[in-house]
Image 1 (cartoon, rainbow, N blue to C red):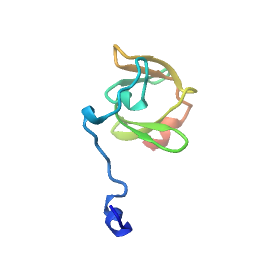
Image 2: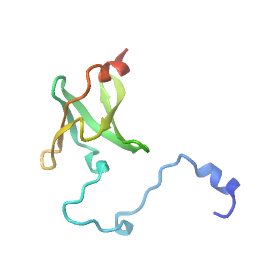
Image 3: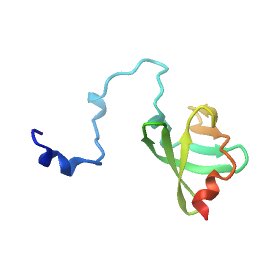
Length: 105
C-alpha cells in the first residue's frame, strides 16, 4: 500500500495470519489471546461465561464475555487474575465490585 487513500478502507479491520507464518514462541510463553475459549469465573459471582474475544489496548488487554445477555469487557491484568488453569481452560478472577453491574443497568 503506497497511499493513504488505499490504506483508509483497511483501518480498524482484523488481520489474520496463518499459523504456519506466525513466529515460533518459546516454551512457557503466554499470550492473553490464548484465553479465548476459556471459562471465566469470578470469586464472588461464580461462572461468568466463555471468553469470546481478547482485545489489546494501550493500557491493558480486555476480554469479552457474554454475561446475563450482555457483552461485558473484563480487564485482564495481574491485579484481577487469581489463577489460570491451562488444562481446564479456566481463569479465576477477583473483579472489582460494581464492574459487571456497569454493563447490566
